[in-house]
Length: 605
Ligand code: DGT
Ligand code: CA
Ligand code: CA
Ligand code: ZN
Image 1 (cartoon, rainbow, N blue to C red):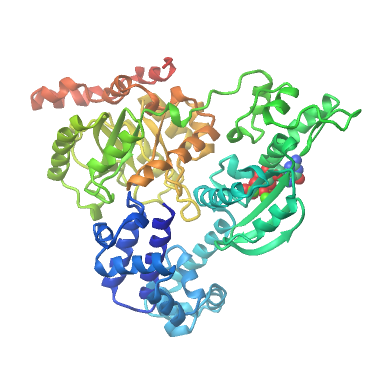
Image 2: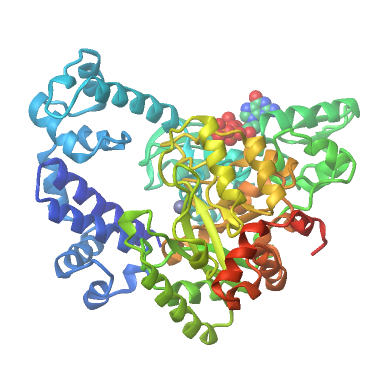
């Protein structure tokens, strides 16, 4: 889908630049919408003709022509013109959270500021507060946003790094001298952010030419170091990539060494020393011989050290080496264990695809079930209503027989500042599954936030807390709450916590997952997909879960549908729906979620 992404970026750039130059807001919005739509479209735009392009939502004749131009020439002339009119540094200012094109236009027009350093100087000299719509507070907020951005920008999101690495690897693997190539470092360990990308290539003849080809790849913007076994480059995105070329016979040793983490390496090297051996990136050696005892595969090396092979997602020296020595490594959850995705949006709210398209795509992935969970009315922009929700339920019932997948009708509710939810309990009990998420009032005190979350968790109809920490990687810090109190409540009430797989969320993150496991919490690993391609993000949720040592039995969407339904039904016995209204209300107030719910998790699958 690279073409779709490239095109979406170009359209976004058009929107930004038109906005910065003070252009028509209507055109700005049109390009923004088209960008989102193209980025999330399920077909590769390179396969589409003009008519096909115009069938993409929000893409009109004008945009379709721009897309064709981009395909034909690699450029959009209008975009080039806009670039020529505006200083290059100006758009970079839009990377500052909360600093939109309107403000960029303003500081450029009134103060001539066109780069981040200039903006920071103006901030220091308190020149911004004099502008219309500014004040001391907005200066203060801007300073904070810049600090946050600079801290974050040193590391790149996992998914961005992975796309760049895959691109480079595909080219390296095409070289005839290269017998294999893969990524190592924090990317292979699937950390949520990556400092730089570490690539490894095995080549026995002419490694120099491999290096030369690498440094000449089109993605390379600048060569930082060019040596016989190691080179470093900066890509056009500003990401550093290190490549090491190693002999095929030492592949396992090099992969192990450069995967890290550093503390994992230090610990296993100690084990080697204690056994009278020496471990390096070339192999595991005895003192007598320079022929390695093990080098070709990681498995051989771990085995020679008396360890089971350790999955890269665990290699942080957090007990995995002791576990591997004792033959007690966790049985980590994997993509293949998943039976469904329980957090999916459609174009009824802010998704891009119809329910039918999302369900078909989920079925194609081999899932046995999926849940459609559009937003609820409190998120006013989404314009959800009871009637729309009910119409969607009817639509899903009609669609269901056409797909070989069970479809649950759900909703992603908003947890209001006081912990209350959208809609009344009677209406809520009509859904098969309910996610409740914080989408507002992120800066409450920790104690208010804790009781807000616990109130939602204790609601008998809430099954999952969505993206519980609400962090956006590099842009919004996690909300503050008493994690132990919240996790204990989730375990006690049988409410699952989401591991949201969306690459800029990965929420819960690994540390909070580990803490939640200590309380016996169960998880739902979901994509929060707003378009068909987003269903592929599942791999990042799985990686995050693995880094928190999560096993399949702890993940509700690995369970067979019958067991999942029992879990979901706890707060809403089906009998409730056919009971007359008065009787129903009477039972609900006394009901709550039975304590026995957490027993679910302990049963084998
Ligand atoms: P990053 O790039 O900050 O996200 O984290 P890593 O883990 O990718 O670190 P990086 O790129 O500096 O190095 C890649 C791997 O190479 C690292 O995980 C382990 C190995 N390594 C690097 N420096 C050392 C070292 O001084 N000692 C040992 N034992 N291993 C090292
Ligand atoms: Ca690295
Ligand atoms: Ca590195
Ligand atoms: Zn949400």
